[in-house]
Every structure is written in C-alpha cells, then in structure tokens.
Image (cartoon, rainbow, N blue to C red; front, side, top):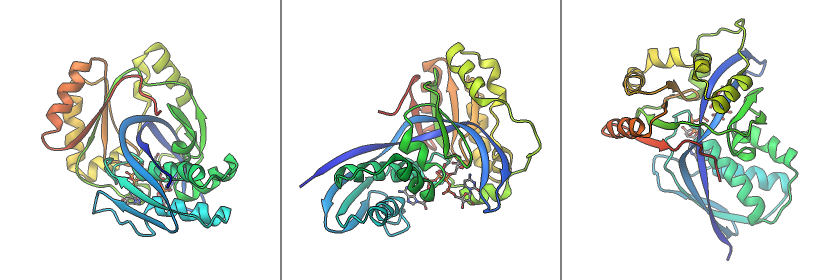
Length: 286
Ligand SMILES: C[C@](O)(CO)[C@H](O)COP(=O)(O)OP(=O)(O)OC[C@H]1O[C@@H](n2ccc(N)nc2=O)[C@H](O)[C@@H]1O
Ligand SMILES: Nc1ncnc2c1ncn2[C@@H]1O[C@H](COP(=O)(O)OP(=O)(O)OP(=O)(O)O)[C@@H](O)[C@H]1O
C-alpha cells in the first residue's frame, strides 16, 4: 500500500490591481503572491476509486471539492484508471482570500502524479490547474514570493521572501470571490505601478516607503460591506504594524511587523475572537 502526506500552504496578496474585464467575465490583474505558514495537510493512499474525507464537516467532500475535482481532471486527462483515498486536515479558513482550496487542488495534482507514477508535462499540468482556479498555478509552480499577471496564472518567481513577520487574521466571515469581482470599484484607466520593481526594493533594501503602492482593489468594497473586516483592519493598524491589507478578495486581513514582539502581541490579542496565524520573517514553502 502506498501512503504519504503533504502540506498545502496558504498565500497572501501584496497589492492586487485589477486591470480589465475579459469577454469570458474573468478579470486580469497584477499581484504579488507570498506564502504563509498556515497550511492544510493532505494524505493520499492508493485505492481503486477516488474518495475523500475531511476534518471540517462544513466542507463538502463531493464532486464540488477541489481535491476531488483535481483528481478527476487528472484521471480524465491522462486516462489513468487508478484511484486514491484522500484525507484533508483542513486548517486554512475558506472564503478568506488565502487560496486554501486552490492550494489543496495544486497539492493533489502534484501528489497524484507521484502516486500514479505518471509523468505529465508541466505545460499540461498548468492548463489543468488554471481550469481548477486562477490561483492554482501559483501553488503548483512557486515556492516563494511571485509576481502574477493575466488572471493570476502568468507567473514569475521573484526568488524573494518577505523580511517581516506576518500576522494573518480571519474575521470569521466569508467573502465569496465571485461577489467581490462583481462588486469592486473599477479603476481600469489608472496607471499601474511596477509591482515587481517595488517588491524587490521592499525585500532587498527593506525600503518601506514603497508600501503605499501595494493597494488591493477589493479593499473598499469589502470594508464597506463587512464591518467586522474593517474592525480587524483598524485593530491591526493600531498594533505597531508597518503595513495592513486585505488578502485577495478577503475576508482575511494581514499585517507586517518589524518587531517579533509586536507581532506576537497583536496575534495574541486578535486570537481572543478570531483564528490567527503568525508566519516568521523569511518564510518559504518547503
Ligand atoms: C482573488 C484572488 O485570490 C487573487 O489571488 C484570485 O483572483 C481568485 O482566484 P480563485 O479563487 O482561484 O478564483 P476562481 O475559482 O478561478 O474564480 C472564482 C470566480 O471569481 C471570478 N474571477 C476569478 C479570478 C479572476 N482573475 N477574475 C475573476 O473574475 C470569476 O467570477 C470566477 O467565477
Ligand atoms: N478543498 C477545499 N478547501 C477549501 N474550499 C474548497 C475546497 N473545495 C472546494 N471549496 C470551495 O471553494 C470555496 C473557496 O475556497 P478557497 O479557500 O480557495 O477560497 P478563498 O479563501 O476565497 O481563496 P481565494 O479566493 O484566494 O482562492 C469555498 O468556499 C468552498 O466552498
């Protein structure tokens, strides 16, 4: 019997600028992805059929689950007839803009190539990943800070890590991604700053004067409609953070800290009401 487990880390977005709406309804954007040390664990065991169980009973384990969708898409693409029994230990909150489901899907694609002993060209795996979700290619192909364009699938590894401690808070409310893309305040004509150059300055030179350029286009509509998300942002902003932002389409809010003691204090204060993660400076996915 073959059996192994893998970690599926979440991400935050440092800046998220939506630049146009495509004819298929998807939006083009520019963003910087950074991994955080908040992760699900996935266990894979060989089996005749595809099945899964999950520690979080709120998450369906039927054909809508991204792990099952990834396994079935890979099976259909390759013609493999083997199955897999999956167990998902779910820790990353969903509807949070942390890409937890996308990370699970990417981990499943990678793990099943190994379990089923198939060699799928990376361009084909990339296409399968995009069909599962715009964030899936990031988790499939990158380990650290990366620049993304297109719908999030045109990636460039920047070989950087954030030199600050990151505290991420889930305000215990979910923001549906499709709602956020439908309702954000459009600014398609605005000039977009060069996020790649700015993030290099930020990480290599610790030049925090550029942080103001990392705007998130979902912030205003999410803060207007979800008072608790605003409340979390305000509490983090008053806790000695260098920078506070919504991640992706929300609801999670993260803060960057120079001083570890400030980060620990903020994380402890927020954990009285919310689920919180603290990621050390320099973090990269394994
Ligand atoms: C907000 C981000 O997390 C930023 O990294 C992503 O853009 C969202 O990526 P995701 O959760 O993988 O999104 P998907 O599952 O592909 O799409 C969910 C829904 O969001 C909208 N969507 C998503 C990505 C994108 N670039 N444009 C969109 O308009 C579409 O209505 C889509 O039906
Ligand atoms: N394995 C899974 N883990 C989490 N959500 C899943 C999974 N499979 C399907 N879903 C569905 O996908 C939705 C979005 O999940 P996910 O955690 O990726 O979204 P998110 O936090 O908004 O992240 P993002 O929009 O940044 O990708 C959930 O609300 C859930 O219904």
